[in-house]
Image 1 (spheres, helix red, strand yellow):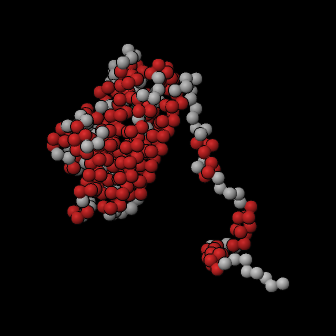
Image 2: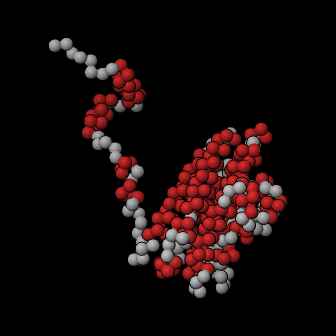
Image 3: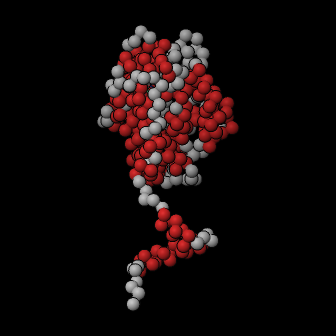
Length: 324
Ligand code: HEM
């Protein structure tokens, strides 16, 4: 009986290519084909590790709304991770073209817009009574201890821009070997401070113990490659208006819009209650959180004096970009 050819030419070509691939590594194609015979089909739930993902919510109180609080923090950390994923790709290389920066900054902006728009899940989406109950059980943990948030900032701008106000201009021309010394003046060391005594809270001390060295190392690594450096180092022809606007929008998203929507949640849950300040372990959040006090600005060279003066007053986002 004549043997029929079971494969068309394209399949045979692929088998040939696979044979070459495995042979190049001293491997035997036939054994790998055996493996394929027994391999299971991939499922959606295995591919995205769904069971693990859905098993990562562990409320520590019986209060139902605590689950919302945990999941929304986790969602935020995933968006932060996506943002870092883009920034890391930009900063792993030497010089990067303006178009590449534009593409990635646009992505980070999209993530932050999603976060800002969804923050109502926190602001309006939990019962205040429930929040105030479970919040006390979480002390001294705070979103303040989100290291990814600080990593985004370190990758977005030069280190002087992250110092507390007053120290920024003085250190505008700092060198890499000064970073360790400057680290003590980083803005967040003035947050999560005890309102009554001005001393560091346990929240801050724990964060420093776990992350100071990691963040300092990152700052050293990003000294030459942070986004501000990359923008300023571009040839003039590549500093086009589109990229300029995208960077300004990043400044607004990270330093005004997200902090403002976050601040709204602190005000909603903590301000009206007589125990408001106690609820966060007695910190100085009212003075610390509002962007108009902090005036953190990644790219001052991209803003006019008037825009800088109005920073965080709700004016920049609406007037400059026509966005809410
Ligand atoms: C009801 C919701 C929330 C309330 C009431 C709240 C409250 C606060 C307060 C009072 C602070 C100041 C530090 C402190 O005193 O502990 C803070 C800081 C912070 N929180 Fe939240 N927070 C909420 C949701 C979130 C979420 C969902 C995230 C996402 C990760 C987050 C991330 C942060 C960050 C990154 C800081 C530091 C901000 C800075 O240094 O400028 N918070 N939060």
